[in-house]
Length: 113
Image (cartoon, rainbow, N blue to C red; front, side, top):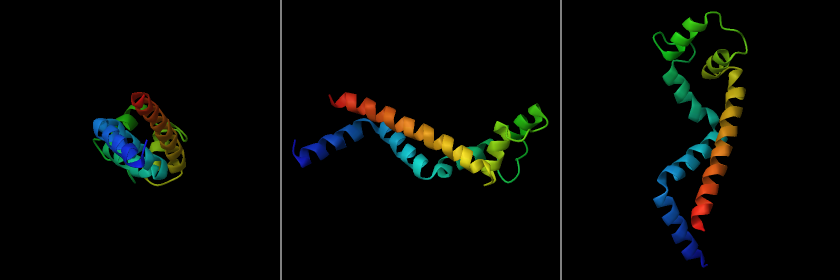
């Protein structure tokens, strides 16, 4: 297969699989800059330098009461405030991003055959 045919076929696969292409792009960003992906999600949940009142994070905190160090809540709050939780959250985002890329590429590879 010539290079131009390969590029043409790749372009066709991308345009017919926009959702999968978007997943790969976001996953690559998740691997390279994980907080770029997760920071907006944490903000939408209400995490930040402080927990926003009326947010999901505030209701979660009210429900659990005393927040234990090392708990999921404390890790997310720390990550949102650029603290020690960043490393843990970034590791999780990178892992799931890599898995997503492998799964999508396997699906696309199967469609090529």
